[in-house]
Image (cartoon, rainbow, N blue to C red; front, side, top):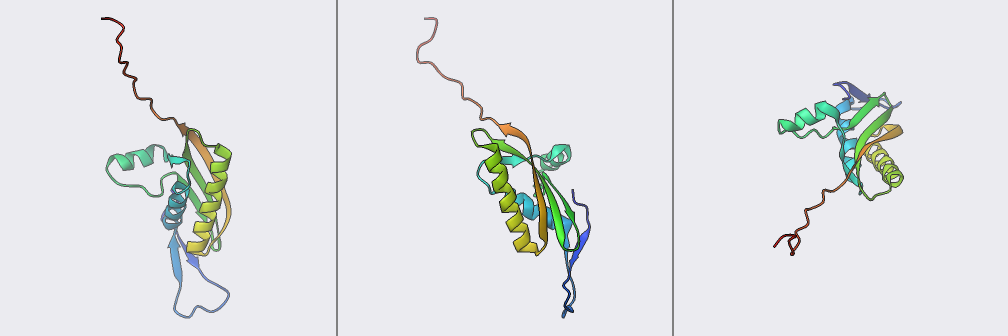
Length: 137
């Protein structure tokens, strides 16, 4: 989703040992994991490519995440499905907070925005009721 681009982290000070580069995919994985940690998030919505990847048995940790990474900042789009019964606005705010905190802490990049796109609601399937009494005897 984010391509194979690398972001080079540097500061105004001279770098003593060299440079550190973070792949966009790393930012996507961090954001995806942080989003799924929030209570009320059923799953990430990765579209058809994410679903095909999972059909082949590969876990796509960046499923449902799109990132734009600059030299010092990043913007993140999250696509997810919420569990039925949770307040969507509250879940979305918690996802924004958790993703922002995780990405900034782990990468040092400033997160300028986290856009949460709720793609659906996961409604649990009802189990068929078995009546002890049958209609016909």
